[in-house]
Amino acid sequence: MTEVTMDKIVNLAKRRGFTFQSSEIYGGLSSCWDYGPLGIALKRNVKDAWWRTMVESRSDIEGIDCSILMHPKVWEASGHLEGFTDPLVDCRTCKARFRADQMDQAQCAKKPSKKPGEHSECDLTDARHFNLMFKTFMGPVEDTASTVFMRPETAQGIFVNFQNILTTARQRIPFGIAQMGKSFRNEITPGNFLFRTREFEQMEMEFFVKPGDDDEWYDYWSKERLDWYKRLGIREDNLRLRVHEPDELAHYAKACVDVEYNFPIGWSELEGIANRTDFDLRKHSEHSGKDLRFFDEAARERYFPYVIEPAAGADRATLAFLVDAYDEDDADGEERAVLRFHPTLAPVKVAVFPLMRKEGQPELANKIADTLRPHFTVQYDQAGSIGRRYRRQDEIGTPYGVTVDHQTSEDETVTLRDRDTMEQQRIKIDALIPELHQRLAKPWQR
Ligand code: ATP
Image (cartoon, rainbow, N blue to C red):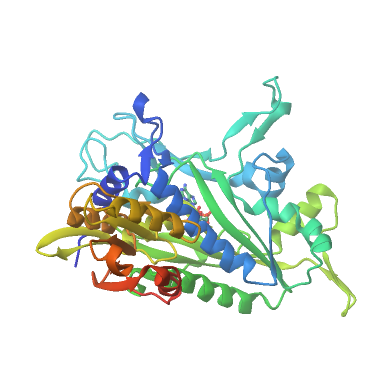
């Protein structure tokens, strides 16, 4: 079994252009990350897979894309202004900051083997509540009237558009609205690479149901969301559902379960599925004065729907897919690092190589790469030995490699190499596109 550490993942991600520290040339901005060419391809594939599953492949979910800045009253109604806080504890001696509810995982800054408060020099303050919303100003005058917030979740944009979608998309309960986009939280203790950052992307869906049907839909979405990660290749042993204890529940939630992944930092939340009851629509009705109830024509009754919310993070999911894909094995007597991505998520689907830089092989390989490009993401590589080129592609998780050799010009065949089995098969150039389509569409498991 390969030991996967966060350091290995961060190093590979940097070396191969998945992620870079934000503003690196100025010393970096803590816990902010930029996605490089391979990272953005991977994250886009994760988001596309989510959108395809949650929106495009269903008739009962609509998509939406709301603005990040919203009317300040949204956050008053949702309770974020008042209650979106974490308890903050400072150490007066070493100036370190901790979340009071996460002290069991925290380390004393002076003596990392001890917990904060256990070292004799620790001088901890009482917990103070710290609002996690970022504030900014709209317009040129920095007065309180122009204060707006960077949204800390995408869900509220969905709730305030509930009536718009209901009327324009002609949906009936039960139905859902999905959104993905940036959210911002001034986290007290960000870190662990992409796991917890202050700016991140969420993938959220609010599913509106008739009160009384909520338990059934909650069970449905819990299972559905866990299965989504499995279908995209995450090993079952590394996934579990953890039901929240009553004392962990947000005051408005009837039930909540986390899809947890076994990250190198331990089992942690990947996604949460919550039964939010009718809290949000009711609050927005009260604060806006608009009736956000649903009118059931058949039963001739008006009610506030209950909401089941699967809320995932695109960056956290990308990290889980990276970690789970990481493997080291032996290739022809040499150790190789390989990212065993599900083909759907792999940033590059096919690499094309000339075996040698002579006999017209580079020209032919380039031509093949050009014919594949409209169908798949392709990389062309002619630098170094063929073994090294295979390793480079294995390390970024490219599932297939096509090699042009001296036989190609004689019989119009190339070799097709599989990342996982490392088997090579000779195949006609004409058959490459259908063969690759077929292989990439096959169900895949580690
Ligand atoms: P946590 O307990 O880890 O702070 P949360 O329960 O507050 O997370 P939610 O509000 O349920 O998280 O957000 C839904 C999802 O958004 C999370 O499951 C996670 O994938 C993602 N997410 C939340 N906060 C962050 C963050 N600071 N950085 C990256 N992803 C995040």
